[in-house]
Length: 496
Figure 1 (cartoon, rainbow, N blue to C red):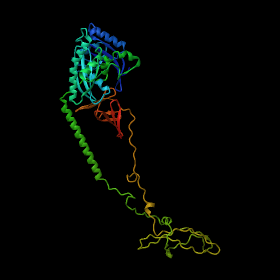
Figure 2 (spheres, rainbow, N blue to C red; figure 1 turned 120 degrees about the vertical axis):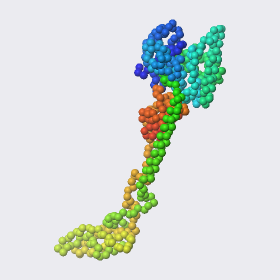
Figure 3 (cartoon, rainbow, N blue to C red; figure 1 turned 90 degrees about the vertical axis):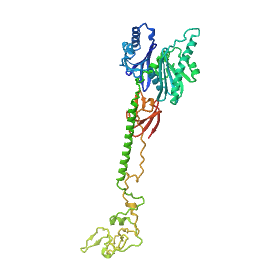
Figure 4 (tube, one colour; figure 1 turned 30 degrees about the vertical axis):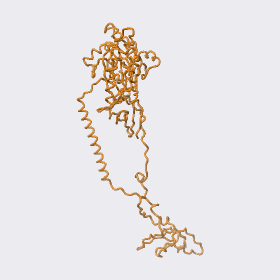
């Protein structure tokens, strides 16, 4: 199957093999098997059994190996790691990644839903070794692994009871040391979760609760794994022993932190901050420059300033005005004949063209000229005169021209109308599923989907990571919408 890989936990007392696939940060489990390397007479017999299990369960050749005793920061090509991987390579596996038990246990804690803001102590208890990790949401507080002998006190009439309390007496001081380290960092441990191949692992629950006064949970089920129903019964029997191996599918490479890089990281952060401040100053200065050199705006009509009337043709002005109360007579020299038919000297009747009387120029008066209709002349007795339509005269009080002839106001100016822009809508692209958030004094990282690591400034499709805090990852879309995505891909808020 495309995308599947084999996750193997290899130690002196355990070899847990799981065929897995990672989908949106969740581990899918298809098949699993466990072997005890100490039960074989030699390395060749163990390699033959491992090769047979690979063929029988159809385990992919590509694998991630969790190796007990692996030093922090080791790579698969290191000379000290090659002998540890020799049985896997001889069995036909191709090791792509090596992981320490503490890193795998931390990956197991990241995919589980946290109980609260406090810390959680994770224990991987095998017959030959123990790994302890303390996590709080988005931060690793403590990690330690050591070798032990779980067969102490296994003889006598009360062998099981004696062995149980012997293991607790040896394990409790190590857990207290981890809880004290977490408490110093402001995250007291609120719960303990155990897994591993130790027989009857659940029997340690009550002694640990009595000794540490903390709630203890045992991962002896397939909770958190995507398993087909037909394989649930068979895989539930070995669930505690394969939980660490399944976590190896999403665990990161082992990498030690170099303290000498702190100064370089601090200088890089100071440089980024200085560039951001300088950019902000330049933007403010440019905005002030544009505002200072902007042309003065003209006050639009209708905002406290009376518009001047626009001069119109005299004919249109006369037709729009109402009749005047006191008409003014036109001098005889400017009087026009009425629009009636009259006989000419040759005896023909000619209908004159209607003409619009023009107002004379009157100097020394501030009132606009008015037009009056002259009285019609009496027509000849042979033909009655035709009545001319009344000509409206200009009113002595002119109508307000601003309301009729005001220039149209441009709608693109902010004073003309208030344009309400619709709020930007978020993209329909699915948001990434955040599986873990790591926030410390010198780094802010998060893992999404199948273990991909992101930081501030990374591009996820059409979104950009703008911020990472202890509870969510902030994504900005091209429209300016910002989305806060919490653990598990849950959207905590949308800022438009």
